[in-house]
Amino acid sequence: MPNEISVEVVATKILVIRGKKVMLDRDLAQLYGVETRVLNQAVKRNKSRFPEDFVFSLTREEIKRISQFVISLKFSKTVYAFTEQGVAMLSSVVNSERAIKVNIHIMRAFVQLRQALAVN
Image (cartoon, rainbow, N blue to C red; front, side, top):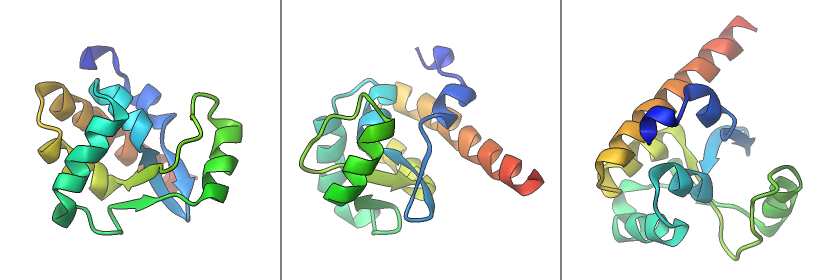
């Protein structure tokens, strides 16, 4: 399944929030093939690995703003945004072969985005 996930598809899930390039918990869970609650539970069990510059909770206003653009975003109580470093750390707590492979695609997408921004 990770072979079907292209860097381009992953890049569409990278958003800019608070001036940082991030991915939402539900998008990451979908890519990893796990439920969002399972991903968030793994993060909570490993809190020390996720300082606030790795993951942060969105405000209600941020959720509303994003949900206008991301149709599949359900209005939930808490939505977490993971920075590139937070996504890299996720592969160590969502312990599956798929998560490792997906993370490689995600890291490549972040690099391509950075390169594209540097050129422009």
